[in-house]
Length: 181
Image (tube, rainbow, N blue to C red):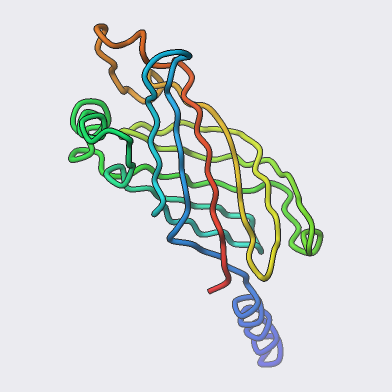
């Protein structure tokens, strides 16, 4: 009995020691809600955080809404106060999993995987599925993805006066340079 307990303890400790968590606090998230030939409605956040557990495929990201920057300070103010209500909903999160991830197959190459999980924006959580590309380079893994969201899906109201200036499908792209910690 004592031997079994020691073996189980050894296996659990070994798994914990070899679990590979990668993270960043300098991820980039861009969104573009522009309509062709109209004013650019786009923001960039270069301080997003992400943790990726290679052993389980768990992928978690967080972005502070006030960290999105725009070309125009007035647009940034409207984004935070009128649309995203960043004082009430200060962050956006993603909690999900990279499906069928195998770290041994990534060494030095590029891999595209299915990513699915819960995206929370403006206090509303929706399940999303998209593709994510992982590229290993110099001990880092760079994760990139592109997908679209709709304001109405996340209870973000656009006043009718400016509604025609906003794209219905907002393009979102992300890039996370992940390092082992």
